[in-house]
Length: 352
Image 1 (cartoon, rainbow, N blue to C red):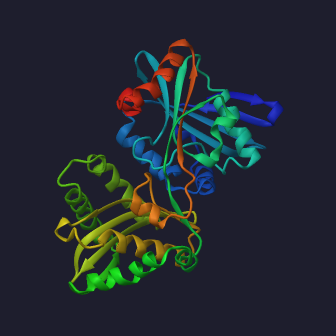
Image 2 (image 1 turned 135 degrees about the vertical axis):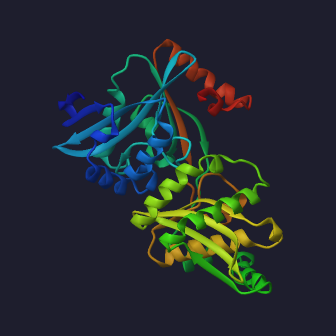
Image 3 (image 1 turned 30 degrees about the vertical axis):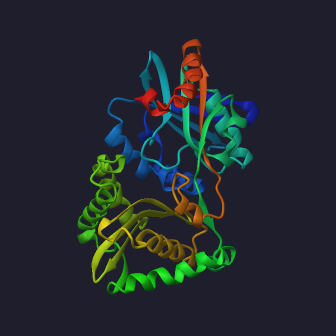
């Protein structure tokens, strides 16, 4: 472990090559401060078991007064002859970034700035993907913005939310379930039986595959990872896997996670046999209302500015991808990234 005491900020910065060196209780505390399940040891260590084989970890730690105040979990790979750093969890996580309190907190902001500034490598490029726009990462480093994507959220109580919607939306919330009830008895079922979890996940994957007409989506390709994490999330009470059933037959599924006072939708599926029916709208409205009624601070609708998500959104902090280069070749690669995205090649292809 490399230690870099920075007396000026009264923060001790160190780096390790293994997440196993991080005490789980400290890590979970920071993940709770970060308020998203993708920061937890359960999510990131599961990701590493599935996707870390050809990568090397570089974990930045910041302590103030002996207390861990920031964890910056990075991993290394090589592309075009340049060392590339990305956050552990990339690809599957809806949100990435430092594991800490929000960077509006001056202690967390200073700690993250020092960790990034002190990365003990001479030449690299850091692609910092899916960072919440309100985290001010650019202000804390010399990174530059590459692009933004939508990340809509629903905040406040359900009743207050409905009062802000138009008459048509409010009528649909009441009318659409009644429309489905013409087909049979409508019910909502939350996965709650550990003996049935594998079967419930089978149903989720089947409905997702049907929704995308049999295409092998990135979610389906990662099925083993999602099964492993779902089992852990179930044990910890984080899993929110909803089904909309008609006469006890599931026609729609919505996978989400509840953690640190926030519920987040993650993936879904539905039976195209009822494609003219408002299955997705009805199930999302039920899940969001239940979350807010049960005391969640907000319901996150997932990445992407899909019109159906925007109908439920009250805010959108956005997600940002930033690039930070050190060394000549890294600067060239970083300069090329936005141009390649503009030619529809995309950042993913560059990093493949």
